[in-house]
Image (cartoon, rainbow, N blue to C red; front, top):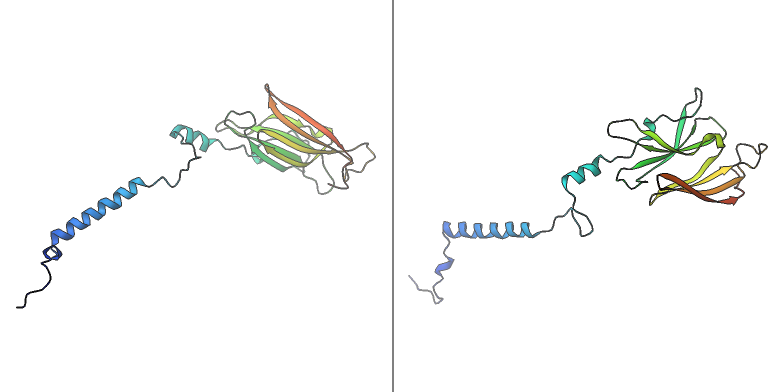
Length: 196
């Protein structure tokens, strides 16, 4: 037998105990790396909620206007929810829904009502405020809810001789919850364009 000119490399002789120790060390490294990883669902800007807070947020669903009863006299035609937008208007942590509703009409421009809906747990949505009554004979153009403010463009008529298809007046208005009521502010924008 010929002797090697290289130094004895006894530690390169692999035995089952060697492989077991290596596997245990690698498992420890992988487990440690997993523990040091940040939570992928969290970020620096995401607040950590308690379980009760998260449950409240999950349950806070804006009222569905399709399930509400509106005070419109539409005969057999029924009504149409033309526009809707959710928002926590009073800052209580539960969203309300603002709905623009009019009678379902085959033609023409039926007047709109603008309603604020709220909903208690398990109950049907209910109207807590009427911002525009259909008796005012107005229709709603632009409409949005942002930062607790409701904004809309109200379209109306300068006289009864103006055809209902073509409102000739418009007013940009906002409503905001203040001291227990929705406070309206707005400015006349003058003549509306042709058509809606």
